[in-house]
Image (cartoon, rainbow, N blue to C red):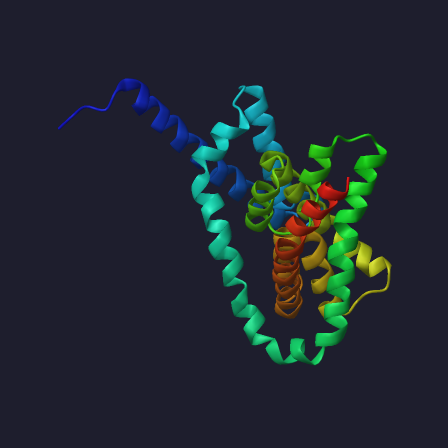
Length: 241
């Protein structure tokens, strides 16, 4: 049996260590979140992301290497998104009864959310590549990364913005909706799904299965609509400009 070169063995061990780091930090964040009785600012996706980012920065590990070591989790994003069809199917009759207002909300929300981000970035002097990388910000990560690759955007920036958007939406969304007088769990879920995609949907399931089902619907439809229209729209804009 051939021996594995020392450098390859060390690289494999380091990759496994980075994978273990992700798991340990996430479950530590989840434990703290549960102990704090689901205090929004301690959401595990927020706390674990910040802690891992700080650790990677302190020991000078680049993001590309960390991403390669955790590629299994990136792959699992796809099946996890598809699995959201299960709660969606359970609430299908309620969703079908509200098809028209939901579609109108979807069209407005899926356009307004990225437009706000791109407009603000433009006003602050962002370059064209950055603006393009911001356009898929309101769709779940696997779809956003596919769109970013197709339109020539920076995948790392797109992924970071998507995660940041989801975390902020999950933390601030429910409280903000309550302040605005939106207490219907169907509306809360649909709004979280459009604006905070996967992370928002996870937060919606914390509220109730009904809220989670409507968030799953919004997440899926926003992703499909954006994937179908955004590349064509950007191509047309590039030809005009």
